[in-house]
Image (cartoon, rainbow, N blue to C red):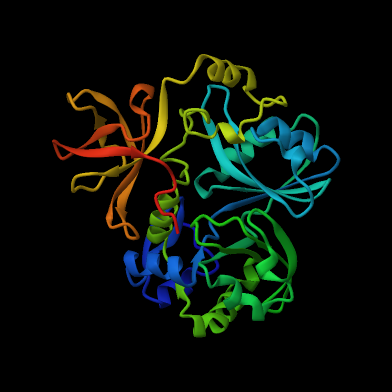
Length: 360
């Protein structure tokens, strides 16, 4: 198990630690419900230093990024970020990622922790044009400071106007006395806030300063369990659950980041799939009857015929009902369609709904 630069801090806070993506990570501190509510109503801090960071630089940087990603990175301007995914050769997804543009010859790709090596090898294999690639994953720590009070709570630590950093933009600046910190607004919770990219040697100092500045706002450390309930209430895909090597971006509802105005890996096959129409779709559903959907539970129709599978599910702390994402046949994907979750051999009624579950 790898440790982040802050593992010892979480252990001192009596966090429940679990193995996650090869790292020793805090899953919860006080409990999922209280941590979830802290982020929805105030401000909380996640250590997500396990995420991967690749810098792509040089005059061929954009060419490489365009080749390996589905979204159109040529639309990015300096200080803007973009959600995208990397398709494989078989119609599935290597990973989803966020692309940050510093300038025309410098980009940062932020990838999922469990896929760092796989992604690096995949991108490298397509780097026939000779873009400069740097895997900085082991050098950076990442704090996600999330919640409606995040900007106000953190403003004393920086000269950067935090309230002015719009969703999917970023700035480099001084933060908690450290230079060249990347401050971005690409959060995964739906409650606003920032991600702070810092060097490992600065992580503990910045963590401590964040908690001092946020004390009056009731800031708390938040674990990965609440991160999962928060992202699921927004309907954000989680790699390994809702998308993987066998799910196409079109099936996953990621047509909006799949731009056929440019050429990319496996573009022709995905274009054919778009024209022919997908046979299954990722849908959001909420429980009508009492029950909690879980990953890999079967989804069935009123006659008990299997129509799909749950990819993510939980009891929503904000809505106090079971919610989930899952793939179903297109015939069962329309809004308000009645479907059933097979929970321990009992078929429990649910219905297809529109995202996000949590409206704020």
